[in-house]
Image (cartoon, rainbow, N blue to C red; front, side, top):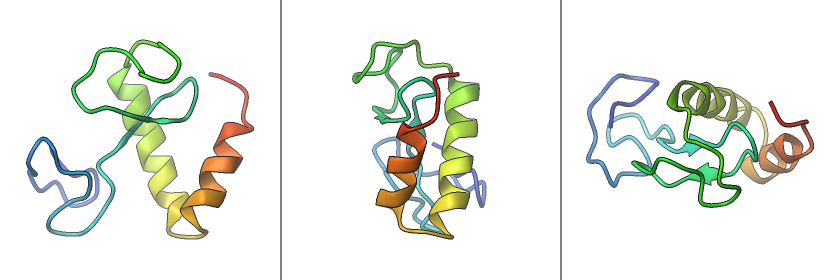
Length: 83
């Protein structure tokens, strides 16, 4: 899996980049929950894994996570209407 921050290739089971420490998690565009890498549907809500939207969600989540606590970010994202 390629890191969205530094573009370093990482093992497919890695949750964080081995070079820069960025999160490699894909975020479901519908329910905003972390998705299992390589799966075609979200295990939480059943939505299709739209990788472009999930990558965008991951980038937003990562940027917000550098400013405030990750649990706060998750709670805020959960309040957003579904896309």
